[in-house]
Amino acid sequence: MTYKLKLRRIGNSTGVIINKELLDKMRVGEGDTIIAVETPSGFELSAYDPAVARQMDAAEKVMRKHREVLRKLAE
Image 1 (cartoon, one colour):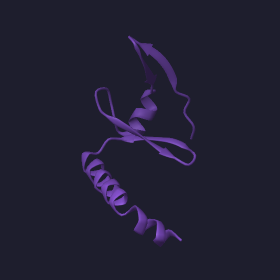
Image 2 (tube, rainbow, N blue to C red):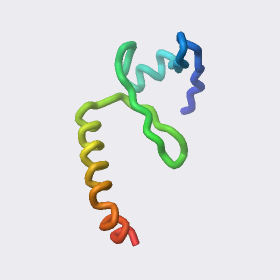
Image 3 (tube, rainbow, N blue to C red):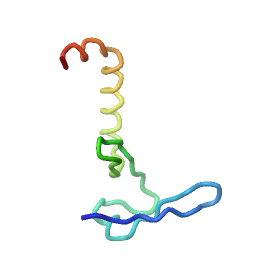
Image 4 (cartoon, helix red, strand yellow):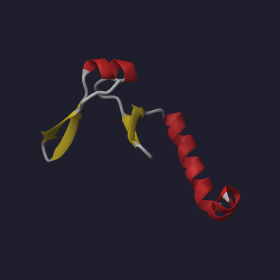
């Protein structure tokens, strides 16, 4: 399913208006935090999970530290 989201000016920033149906499907509401992840096809919005954020931070550190090894493994 595709949802059309509206951008609105909020003070000096720009916010995204997300309808109730999509918020319910994402299991988030006003005041919750969501994350945007860049993917090959665009951006993916999902509910913020602190445990997943910690795991992603750890994975990024490992990937930075072992960049050359990972590059060789990918060949």
